[in-house]
Image (cartoon, rainbow, N blue to C red):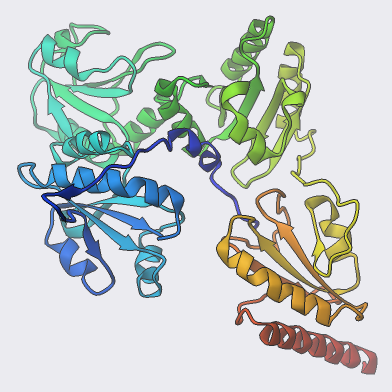
Length: 495
């Protein structure tokens, strides 16, 4: 299946405003971040109940931005009681790639919280600046749920701009309490949990309940909701579903960004309306969109309203233009997209209904078809993939690349040499496709990194190229596949 990139990565740029600091003290530079590798990783982690590990690549710009903040946080946390250890692993180093694979590192930097000697692994989901890292990790290293013994405790704990979950119990023991604490331990990197013996301490909701009951506080929709099923799976589903707004708002207000992240990380199909929210007349769009969200609540679709000013990364990711707003995009979990541009309020309900009934064709992002395509390595875009690769009758070597990828840049002149070698051979085509600007909808191409190279023979066989990236090895690969095809054709003729 074609590479499905987490959509949130397109929005992550809004959170990347990190500043550099110096770790130099007394004329000497002391590193507080521990460097780990394949040789000492397991032994080191096994000795710690709580350790944070950053998987980084030396060439990664975000990693370079994080480094001074991470080091400063490590210095501050070394003075905590008990000390909290921060470590790092160069995941780009060949000897450490098994570690990166084991911990499912798919981008840089990736931070993991390892508990109980590495037996429990959680994603780090906190800030990327030193003070925020320190505050977040102090909470993560403490109890999974905080006891509230007074209204003052509850008032200081329950942030009106965050999701906060509180369990009310007649006593801090029993199956319900144990299940609640298990939930808090499991989801502690995503939410803040508390527990109390008295509901009257809580700022909202029925104060006379004695429990057991779980009360989820949120800064949107109905502001709080109670739940009394203490099965751990049921509790987790309740928290996840209740912590996403009926309509998530994506604008430049940082307090909304955690909910946007949750929206994009959720397993729901995503319906996104993008518009200029400062325009007159937008209220009717917002009203109709919310009505549709109410109509399809609980049916596996999440809804997001994105302001034009904040959504530039989304526009680039989806390959749409500002001139097309208001527009609605539906994104399915397999990467399929559906688009309705130039939207009017009365279009929303019937278009979503048509989508649900399978009447809307998928939208495929494609770069414009090149006016000229005269270079030795031919340019393929999504709209020409079928004609240039599948219907050409040629043996096609196709590179899927990213413009920013260093390995792709090194491969480019080599592919050009290969293309020049076959310049007078009408049966061979050397081509490239920018996988960041074109959707890859054909399931034959499994693109998970860059560059990814495939060969499609003239008779339709597709195989991944995994050899050395030299002119000689690539030509040898092509010729062996051509010989194989010719041999199979000869056998067919004999039969």
